[in-house]
Length: 341
Image (cartoon, rainbow, N blue to C red; front, side):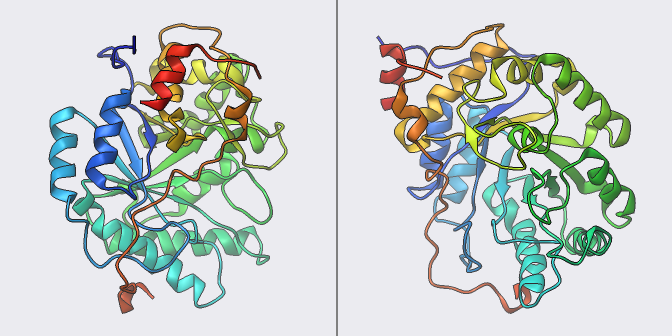
Protein backbone atom coordinates (compact mmCIF):
# COMPACT_ATOMS: atom_id res chain seq x y z
CA UNK A 1 0.00 0.00 0.00
CA UNK A 2 1.24 3.53 -0.71
CA UNK A 3 2.33 5.56 2.26
CA UNK A 4 0.29 8.33 3.75
CA UNK A 5 1.19 11.86 2.77
CA UNK A 6 3.99 13.29 4.87
CA UNK A 7 2.99 15.59 7.70
CA UNK A 8 5.45 17.83 9.47
CA UNK A 9 5.22 18.75 13.16
CA UNK A 10 4.05 22.25 13.96
CA UNK A 11 7.52 23.26 15.16
CA UNK A 12 9.31 21.98 12.03
CA UNK A 13 10.86 24.43 9.57
CA UNK A 14 9.33 24.87 6.14
CA UNK A 15 10.71 22.13 3.87
CA UNK A 16 10.18 22.07 0.12
CA UNK A 17 11.72 21.30 -3.22
CA UNK A 18 12.40 22.89 -6.58
CA UNK A 19 9.83 21.63 -9.08
CA UNK A 20 9.57 22.21 -12.78
CA UNK A 21 6.55 24.19 -13.99
CA UNK A 22 6.70 23.32 -17.69
CA UNK A 23 3.37 21.50 -17.34
CA UNK A 24 1.79 24.33 -15.38
CA UNK A 25 2.10 26.23 -12.13
CA UNK A 26 -0.97 24.64 -10.57
CA UNK A 27 0.29 21.12 -11.28
CA UNK A 28 3.56 21.95 -9.56
CA UNK A 29 1.69 23.14 -6.47
CA UNK A 30 -0.47 20.02 -6.49
CA UNK A 31 2.61 17.84 -6.75
CA UNK A 32 4.21 19.70 -3.86
CA UNK A 33 1.18 18.96 -1.69
CA UNK A 34 1.10 15.31 -2.78
CA UNK A 35 4.68 14.66 -1.73
CA UNK A 36 4.44 16.60 1.53
CA UNK A 37 6.31 19.79 0.69
CA UNK A 38 5.46 22.85 2.76
CA UNK A 39 7.44 25.27 0.57
CA UNK A 40 8.15 25.49 -3.16
CA UNK A 41 10.85 26.88 -5.42
CA UNK A 42 10.37 27.38 -9.15
CA UNK A 43 11.82 29.07 -12.19
CA UNK A 44 9.46 31.70 -13.54
CA UNK A 45 10.85 31.06 -17.02
CA UNK A 46 13.67 29.38 -18.93
CA UNK A 47 16.70 29.63 -16.57
CA UNK A 48 19.22 29.55 -19.44
CA UNK A 49 17.77 32.34 -21.59
CA UNK A 50 17.40 36.10 -21.31
CA UNK A 51 14.00 36.09 -23.01
CA UNK A 52 11.16 36.33 -20.46
CA UNK A 53 7.41 35.92 -20.81
CA UNK A 54 5.57 39.27 -20.84
CA UNK A 55 2.84 38.18 -18.42
CA UNK A 56 2.29 35.47 -15.79
CA UNK A 57 0.87 32.09 -16.85
CA UNK A 58 -2.90 31.76 -17.12
CA UNK A 59 -3.06 29.55 -14.03
CA UNK A 60 -1.06 31.95 -11.83
CA UNK A 61 -4.07 33.11 -9.81
CA UNK A 62 -5.21 29.52 -9.19
CA UNK A 63 -1.64 28.60 -8.24
CA UNK A 64 -1.49 31.42 -5.68
CA UNK A 65 -4.87 30.49 -4.25
CA UNK A 66 -4.02 26.80 -4.03
CA UNK A 67 -0.73 27.44 -2.25
CA UNK A 68 -2.53 29.69 0.21
CA UNK A 69 -5.22 27.13 1.00
CA UNK A 70 -2.78 24.23 1.27
CA UNK A 71 -0.21 26.12 3.36
CA UNK A 72 2.61 25.97 0.81
CA UNK A 73 4.82 28.94 1.59
CA UNK A 74 7.04 30.62 0.89
CA UNK A 75 7.07 30.38 -2.87
CA UNK A 76 10.59 31.16 -4.08
CA UNK A 77 11.63 32.13 -7.59
CA UNK A 78 15.13 31.11 -8.58
CA UNK A 79 16.48 33.70 -10.98
CA UNK A 80 18.09 32.86 -14.31
CA UNK A 81 21.43 31.08 -14.28
CA UNK A 82 22.73 33.69 -16.73
CA UNK A 83 22.69 36.50 -14.18
CA UNK A 84 26.13 37.65 -13.09
CA UNK A 85 26.07 40.61 -10.73
CA UNK A 86 29.84 40.86 -10.53
CA UNK A 87 30.82 41.13 -14.19
CA UNK A 88 31.48 44.30 -16.13
CA UNK A 89 31.32 43.17 -19.77
CA UNK A 90 28.40 44.48 -21.77
CA UNK A 91 25.71 43.71 -22.71
CA UNK A 92 25.76 40.99 -20.04
CA UNK A 93 26.25 43.37 -17.11
CA UNK A 94 23.12 45.36 -17.97
CA UNK A 95 21.17 42.22 -18.84
CA UNK A 96 22.07 40.73 -15.46
CA UNK A 97 21.05 43.77 -13.44
CA UNK A 98 17.82 44.42 -15.33
CA UNK A 99 17.02 40.72 -15.60
CA UNK A 100 17.14 40.36 -11.83
CA UNK A 101 15.07 43.50 -11.40
CA UNK A 102 12.50 42.08 -13.79
CA UNK A 103 12.23 38.93 -11.62
CA UNK A 104 11.86 41.00 -8.45
CA UNK A 105 9.14 43.21 -9.88
CA UNK A 106 7.01 40.40 -11.21
CA UNK A 107 7.54 37.86 -8.39
CA UNK A 108 4.24 38.82 -6.66
CA UNK A 109 2.36 37.79 -9.80
CA UNK A 110 3.64 34.27 -9.13
CA UNK A 111 2.83 34.54 -5.43
CA UNK A 112 6.55 34.58 -4.62
CA UNK A 113 7.95 36.49 -1.67
CA UNK A 114 11.63 35.63 -2.27
CA UNK A 115 13.82 35.79 -5.36
CA UNK A 116 17.01 33.77 -5.04
CA UNK A 117 20.00 34.45 -7.27
CA UNK A 118 23.53 33.26 -7.76
CA UNK A 119 25.90 36.12 -7.06
CA UNK A 120 28.28 35.66 -9.96
CA UNK A 121 31.90 36.15 -10.90
CA UNK A 122 34.27 39.09 -11.18
CA UNK A 123 35.48 37.67 -14.51
CA UNK A 124 39.12 38.46 -13.91
CA UNK A 125 38.65 42.00 -12.60
CA UNK A 126 39.49 41.00 -9.04
CA UNK A 127 37.39 40.53 -5.90
CA UNK A 128 37.43 44.21 -4.90
CA UNK A 129 35.98 45.36 -8.21
CA UNK A 130 33.59 42.40 -8.34
CA UNK A 131 32.21 43.12 -4.88
CA UNK A 132 31.77 46.80 -5.73
CA UNK A 133 29.77 45.87 -8.83
CA UNK A 134 27.64 43.37 -6.94
CA UNK A 135 26.78 45.91 -4.24
CA UNK A 136 25.87 48.55 -6.85
CA UNK A 137 23.64 46.09 -8.71
CA UNK A 138 21.98 44.82 -5.54
CA UNK A 139 21.23 48.38 -4.40
CA UNK A 140 19.78 49.22 -7.81
CA UNK A 141 17.53 46.16 -7.80
CA UNK A 142 16.32 46.78 -4.24
CA UNK A 143 15.79 50.50 -4.86
CA UNK A 144 13.69 49.85 -7.96
CA UNK A 145 11.53 47.06 -6.52
CA UNK A 146 9.18 46.59 -3.57
CA UNK A 147 8.11 44.02 -0.99
CA UNK A 148 10.03 41.01 -2.31
CA UNK A 149 13.13 39.73 -0.48
CA UNK A 150 16.31 39.24 -2.49
CA UNK A 151 18.37 36.23 -1.38
CA UNK A 152 22.00 35.99 -2.47
CA UNK A 153 23.23 32.41 -2.72
CA UNK A 154 26.71 31.33 -1.63
CA UNK A 155 29.00 29.81 -4.26
CA UNK A 156 31.20 26.72 -4.25
CA UNK A 157 34.17 28.94 -5.03
CA UNK A 158 35.11 27.77 -8.50
CA UNK A 159 36.82 30.12 -10.93
CA UNK A 160 36.32 33.81 -10.23
CA UNK A 161 33.05 33.40 -8.31
CA UNK A 162 32.31 35.59 -5.32
CA UNK A 163 30.51 34.60 -2.14
CA UNK A 164 32.08 31.23 -1.28
CA UNK A 165 32.84 32.31 2.28
CA UNK A 166 30.53 33.58 4.98
CA UNK A 167 32.95 36.46 5.47
CA UNK A 168 32.49 37.52 1.86
CA UNK A 169 28.70 37.37 2.19
CA UNK A 170 29.01 39.53 5.30
CA UNK A 171 31.05 42.05 3.32
CA UNK A 172 28.30 42.32 0.71
CA UNK A 173 25.73 43.02 3.43
CA UNK A 174 27.96 45.53 5.21
CA UNK A 175 28.47 47.55 2.04
CA UNK A 176 24.82 47.50 0.94
CA UNK A 177 23.19 50.71 2.16
CA UNK A 178 20.04 51.10 0.06
CA UNK A 179 17.26 48.56 0.56
CA UNK A 180 19.32 46.38 2.89
CA UNK A 181 16.20 45.59 4.93
CA UNK A 182 15.09 43.31 2.06
CA UNK A 183 18.47 41.67 1.52
CA UNK A 184 18.85 38.08 2.72
CA UNK A 185 20.98 35.03 1.99
CA UNK A 186 20.70 31.43 0.90
CA UNK A 187 23.23 28.81 1.97
CA UNK A 188 23.48 25.90 -0.44
CA UNK A 189 24.92 22.92 1.45
CA UNK A 190 26.59 21.44 -1.65
CA UNK A 191 28.23 24.83 -2.24
CA UNK A 192 29.36 25.03 1.39
CA UNK A 193 30.89 21.57 1.05
CA UNK A 194 32.60 22.44 -2.24
CA UNK A 195 33.99 25.61 -0.67
CA UNK A 196 35.56 23.54 2.11
CA UNK A 197 33.12 23.92 4.99
CA UNK A 198 33.02 20.75 7.10
CA UNK A 199 29.28 20.46 7.62
CA UNK A 200 29.58 16.76 8.38
CA UNK A 201 29.79 15.46 11.06
CA UNK A 202 27.17 17.41 12.95
CA UNK A 203 29.50 19.61 14.98
CA UNK A 204 30.62 21.24 11.74
CA UNK A 205 27.06 22.46 11.17
CA UNK A 206 27.03 24.15 14.55
CA UNK A 207 30.26 25.98 13.71
CA UNK A 208 28.98 27.19 10.34
CA UNK A 209 25.60 28.35 11.65
CA UNK A 210 27.24 30.06 14.62
CA UNK A 211 29.65 31.88 12.32
CA UNK A 212 26.83 33.01 10.06
CA UNK A 213 24.88 34.26 13.08
CA UNK A 214 27.92 36.13 14.37
CA UNK A 215 28.73 37.92 11.11
CA UNK A 216 25.33 38.31 9.44
CA UNK A 217 22.49 37.23 11.73
CA UNK A 218 20.17 34.28 11.31
CA UNK A 219 17.23 36.57 10.63
CA UNK A 220 18.79 37.05 7.19
CA UNK A 221 19.22 33.33 6.50
CA UNK A 222 15.95 32.94 4.63
CA UNK A 223 16.86 29.83 2.62
CA UNK A 224 18.96 26.71 2.87
CA UNK A 225 19.31 24.64 -0.28
CA UNK A 226 19.46 21.17 1.25
CA UNK A 227 21.60 19.39 -1.32
CA UNK A 228 24.03 16.58 -0.68
CA UNK A 229 27.16 16.58 -2.85
CA UNK A 230 28.81 14.21 -5.30
CA UNK A 231 32.04 16.19 -5.00
CA UNK A 232 34.85 16.05 -2.48
CA UNK A 233 34.96 18.65 0.25
CA UNK A 234 36.97 21.68 -0.85
CA UNK A 235 36.86 20.66 -4.51
CA UNK A 236 35.19 23.95 -5.54
CA UNK A 237 32.75 21.82 -7.54
CA UNK A 238 28.96 21.94 -7.39
CA UNK A 239 27.38 18.53 -8.10
CA UNK A 240 24.14 17.82 -6.26
CA UNK A 241 23.22 14.42 -4.83
CA UNK A 242 20.16 12.85 -3.17
CA UNK A 243 19.68 13.84 0.47
CA UNK A 244 22.00 11.85 2.72
CA UNK A 245 23.40 9.80 -0.16
CA UNK A 246 26.45 11.89 -1.00
CA UNK A 247 29.70 13.03 0.54
CA UNK A 248 27.98 15.10 3.23
CA UNK A 249 25.77 12.23 4.33
CA UNK A 250 22.87 11.92 6.80
CA UNK A 251 24.71 13.44 9.77
CA UNK A 252 25.19 16.90 8.31
CA UNK A 253 21.78 17.00 6.65
CA UNK A 254 20.03 15.96 9.88
CA UNK A 255 21.97 18.48 11.98
CA UNK A 256 20.76 21.32 9.77
CA UNK A 257 17.14 20.20 9.73
CA UNK A 258 17.04 19.70 13.50
CA UNK A 259 18.92 22.84 14.52
CA UNK A 260 16.39 24.85 16.57
CA UNK A 261 18.06 28.08 15.48
CA UNK A 262 16.87 27.36 11.93
CA UNK A 263 13.24 26.94 12.86
CA UNK A 264 12.30 29.98 10.76
CA UNK A 265 14.57 29.19 7.81
CA UNK A 266 13.08 27.53 4.73
CA UNK A 267 14.76 24.40 3.39
CA UNK A 268 14.54 23.70 -0.35
CA UNK A 269 15.98 20.65 -2.10
CA UNK A 270 17.44 20.84 -5.61
CA UNK A 271 18.04 17.12 -5.96
CA UNK A 272 18.29 14.80 -8.98
CA UNK A 273 15.52 12.81 -10.60
CA UNK A 274 12.55 15.06 -9.89
CA UNK A 275 10.71 13.97 -13.03
CA UNK A 276 11.42 10.33 -12.23
CA UNK A 277 9.66 10.65 -8.87
CA UNK A 278 12.68 11.24 -6.65
CA UNK A 279 11.14 14.49 -5.46
CA UNK A 280 8.94 12.32 -3.22
CA UNK A 281 11.86 10.12 -2.21
CA UNK A 282 14.03 13.06 -1.18
CA UNK A 283 11.21 14.77 0.71
CA UNK A 284 10.71 11.57 2.68
CA UNK A 285 14.43 11.26 3.33
CA UNK A 286 14.47 14.80 4.75
CA UNK A 287 11.39 13.97 6.84
CA UNK A 288 13.06 10.83 8.22
CA UNK A 289 16.14 12.82 9.20
CA UNK A 290 14.05 15.47 10.92
CA UNK A 291 12.20 12.72 12.81
CA UNK A 292 15.49 11.42 14.18
CA UNK A 293 16.70 8.80 11.70
CA UNK A 294 20.48 8.29 11.61
CA UNK A 295 20.43 6.01 8.57
CA UNK A 296 18.41 6.21 5.38
CA UNK A 297 17.06 3.58 2.94
CA UNK A 298 19.53 2.56 0.27
CA UNK A 299 18.91 3.91 -3.21
CA UNK A 300 19.16 1.79 -6.37
CA UNK A 301 22.13 2.27 -8.74
CA UNK A 302 19.92 4.03 -11.30
CA UNK A 303 19.22 6.80 -8.78
CA UNK A 304 22.82 7.94 -9.10
CA UNK A 305 22.60 8.27 -12.87
CA UNK A 306 19.87 10.89 -12.73
CA UNK A 307 20.33 14.60 -13.26
CA UNK A 308 18.41 17.77 -12.44
CA UNK A 309 16.72 18.29 -15.82
CA UNK A 310 13.34 18.43 -14.08
CA UNK A 311 13.83 21.98 -12.84
CA UNK A 312 12.69 23.57 -16.07
CA UNK A 313 10.58 26.67 -16.29
CA UNK A 314 7.57 27.09 -18.49
CA UNK A 315 8.20 27.70 -22.14
CA UNK A 316 7.77 31.42 -22.71
CA UNK A 317 5.74 33.04 -25.41
CA UNK A 318 7.94 34.63 -28.02
CA UNK A 319 8.37 37.97 -26.29
CA UNK A 320 11.64 39.62 -25.45
CA UNK A 321 12.53 41.15 -22.14
CA UNK A 322 11.35 44.77 -22.03
CA UNK A 323 13.85 47.32 -23.20
CA UNK A 324 14.42 48.34 -19.58
CA UNK A 325 15.51 44.79 -18.81
CA UNK A 326 18.19 45.03 -21.46
CA UNK A 327 25.90 4.44 -1.86
CA UNK A 328 23.89 1.53 -2.69
CA UNK A 329 21.77 -1.25 -4.04
CA UNK A 330 18.01 -1.19 -3.65
CA UNK A 331 15.18 0.84 -2.25
CA UNK A 332 12.13 -0.53 -0.58
CA UNK A 333 9.24 -1.25 -2.93
CA UNK A 334 7.06 1.32 -1.21
CA UNK A 335 9.56 4.05 -2.05
CA UNK A 336 9.62 2.88 -5.66
CA UNK A 337 5.82 3.15 -5.73
CA UNK A 338 6.01 6.62 -4.19
CA UNK A 339 8.59 7.68 -6.77
CA UNK A 340 6.22 6.60 -9.52
CA UNK A 341 3.31 8.43 -7.86
